[in-house]
Length: 100
Image (cartoon, rainbow, N blue to C red):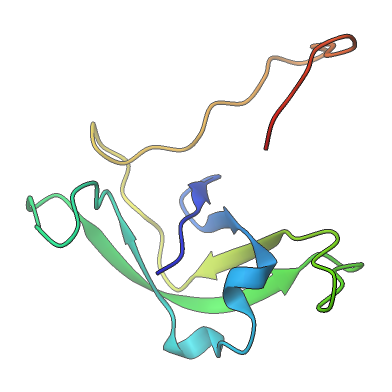
């Protein structure tokens, strides 16, 4: 099982180490699945078409441990499935502490 963040209807942001040795065509994304293993009925399942790891991802040290999964069909946003929130244009984050 891998978790990710929905960037838009076709792209999911995740950790590259979670996709090591995985074949994209064998991966599935289940958006809106908040209570595994129970299904509430609003989940959407999509196949993964492509995976793009960070160009400088290091498989041994997991430096630059980030990847994009491209879905085979777009998600339909609703009250249970939506993209992450983005900062407003020109937002400055100097002096703030962040944890990832």
